[in-house]
Image (cartoon, rainbow over all chains, first blue to last red; front, side, top):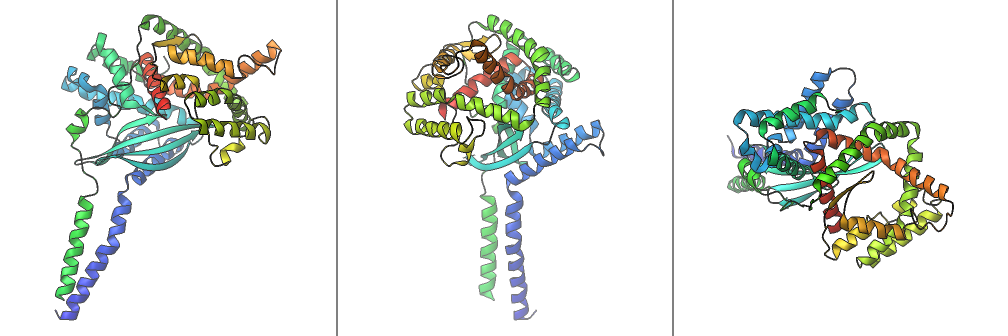
Length: 202
Length: 246
């Protein structure tokens, strides 16, 4: 290789790295990723034709699991009560609560109009945590929804709490689980969750 | 040549460093085990839980069996802009309570803004049906009441109370609501309207119009809750704590 040739190769390499850099950063923005996922979930819910009920549910769960760490959300909500569950129960409870949450918060949306979502901004909570705030406008009502994300080793930015009108869902469930385990056990919790999923209106 | 190579190495290493330093990561177990951000959970004393749960059960039956079907029907029948206009109208009437709440908390600026808003909406906004103040900088809505002023003064909740029909409150906020009532045109004293029937109709109209919004939230929450009573109680405590801090 002649000297100019090497220089040209280096220049090309430099150019390639430089042009790749902005893309690397833009693609990484947790707020953009979250927004894309939420929009995809809503589109899937309103997709009347192509998917059956079961397929739709699975697709939504897959989409959400890319950004939401349900295992972290549920273990934080259970707190010290987590240790009252054996391994099988832990897995059962994690699956049942994920199902219950998705069922409760998507039921209303699928037949109604599409909610209008506005992502407002990102605030740094600590060196490994951020809060992304948004508003959801649905049938004339404006609801503030904030997502707390942590940069989890091996997973990247993951939602670990959702605040609706300032009320932390993890904290709210923590209170309910504490109340439950004061008088009842893990088996009763699993039965309760199952019956809630089967008969949502009772 | 050597110069370009150096430049290249320097640039590449800077890039690697920048990527690496973009926020630290947190281990899965550390995140699970750490305390919740809210610190010690916002709690509220509930010495009359048995009584409260009974009222809660009564309200719950009322909301789901009677109010929800009605609210859904109302939302379907009444066009959205009208529903919104009715909501704005009642919002505007709550001005005196927000004003008093702001003054009692020593927030004269906000109290002034509330007055400006009330004047703009009552005049250009056709008695509050439209909300032109939302388009004016510095007149965006605030959410104050006298219960929050009590809290700012260091008064605790006292204890949690579930009221028949109306739902959760605390001793402090309940007393605050009475004070709000004294400065609010609804329900009393309504100096402008002497006729009892008219006053009642307006009160019912306010509650009916606010229902669809509350019912949707209540319903999703109820369906996803392990213990709806504990969920609503905690939601109330967290929400009030946040409103007071704002």
